[in-house]
Amino acid sequence: MHPVIMAMAAATQLLTPVSDTVPKLNVEVTCRGSVETDKAMGLDLPQSFDKCMSDENSARDQLGPIWSSYSPAVRAQCEGEATVAGEASYVDLLTCLQLTNGSLTPATDSLRGASRKKKATK
Image 1 (cartoon, helix red, strand yellow):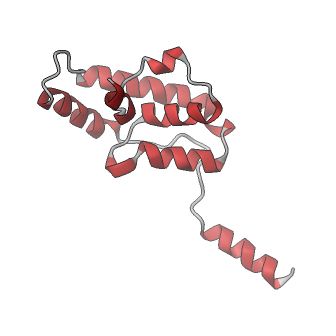
Image 2 (cartoon, helix red, strand yellow):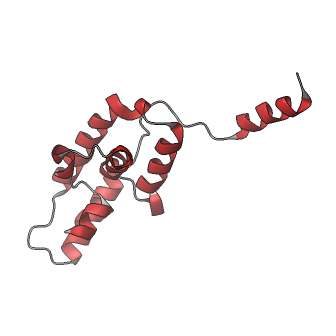
């Protein structure tokens, strides 16, 4: 094999592979923080921890069948956006993926979870 090709093959193994399975996110911490933020903001109807977790689990369940249909680059980009600043959200991850191909559905749009994006627009 040509030395350049061997070097390229070795270099690609140093890259972090993007998994074919949905990443495991610690959304409990994010949901607890989301509930506290809602309370601190004095919202009339702050989202409960249970509702936040329900939304996050629903988004995770929706990700399972579609995750591998997205390219590794898109998955890596969206995972990065969904875990920015140590706050993880399956709702953000699902929304990011769907926005890449315009498939954001009304069912997804109703999920709030711990999403930072949805809070900013409410």
